[in-house]
Amino acid sequence: MATETLLDVRDLSVDYLATNGAVHAVRKVNFALQRGEILGLAGESGCGKSTLAYAIARLLRPPAYITGGEILYYPGQHEEMITMRLPKKGRKTDPEGAIDILRLSPRDLHRFRWNELSIVFQSAMNALNPVMRVGDQIMDVLITHRPDMNAEQRRKRAAELFEMVGISPDRLRGYPHELSGGMRQRAVIAIALALQPELIIMDEPTTALDVVVQREILQLISNLCKEFSTAMIFITHDLSLLIELADKIAIMYAGTMIEKAQSKDLYLHPRHPYSYGLLNSFPTLHGPHKIMAGIPGSPPDLRMLPQGCTFQERCPFVFEHCRQVTPALITTNPEQPEQLAACHLYDEKITKEVPTIADLAAGYEKLATLSLEGNLE
Ligand SMILES: Nc1ncnc2c1ncn2[C@@H]1O[C@H](COP(=O)(O)OP(=O)(O)OP(=O)(O)O)[C@@H](O)[C@H]1O
Image (cartoon, rainbow, N blue to C red):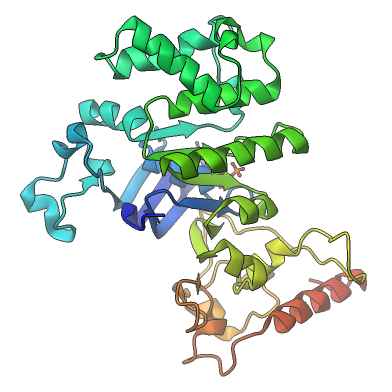
């Protein structure tokens, strides 16, 4: 896989301006995505996953406002895109001429979407227009964004796309209600792939499907991304699903990324107590019986965030420093410099010994026991 940067999100913040105070839905998020890479975004409901994704696609509408940061996009050799690169004076951060998505004009944004980035929304299977043949819905995208194609070329491309996602091209003449849920989902993916974008954002695309169909669709997505070197940001609550699909995973909590790691590293050794809690919130079918603690409590109000770490109230390992100072994302193990966690437990200036997996398990077990005994505050 090429390891060239495609997207570089820097200090991105988004607020929803409500009458009773600003909801700080995304707070100073930083991450980079390489060409062809699959990044999984996980975290509890309301932690800002969709807001982050929609900010990248510039799809947010008031009362949402991007309050800071930049989203640099490296367009590769796509000629149309090269003309959109930042003017020289804007190149303070990038000698190669990236596009800052936040600074695109409406016209350039129109070219950027679909050509470079497409998005599959939550409940995607219902995103198709019920009174229009599915084939015509693919044609629509091609007519708008590929005016150089004639009708015959568009028809051929639509058939090719359907074949790619495993639907017989004669279904192109069908209406959405004539397709099963899984097929509708595949059709939506075909539309997202129509212009072979560099980046696809999928927001909970498979939640409405049964697990067997879900697995087929995920396999399809993974194969297509590999085949075309398409990068993807895949959003879900289901961490176990991401571990199979994604190259890297970012865990979000209360609007920030609190852990970033290669999927395998996160699975084998989650570092942040919240990531550990998320991974261990469901029982395994094998192995010894253990008390399930889940993660007690709920995330903080995003309008009134506490001083220090936002996970402090739910963390089995909280200590005084956590209530004072907001932890930055830091390396948790010198042997895996790419695994970062925003937790003081890994700051050697503050804690003498970093916690092992057994320590994290013991912390949660203690919480579970307290909760069973009714002694949890
Ligand atoms: N229009 C709005 N006005 C005010 N607050 C909003 C609005 N839309 C979202 N929020 C708040 O922003 C925060 C982030 O929401 P977001 O939908 O991005 O989270 P999420 O992690 O994608 O959740 P889910 O998994 O449930 O989709 C939440 O606290 C939510 O209540």
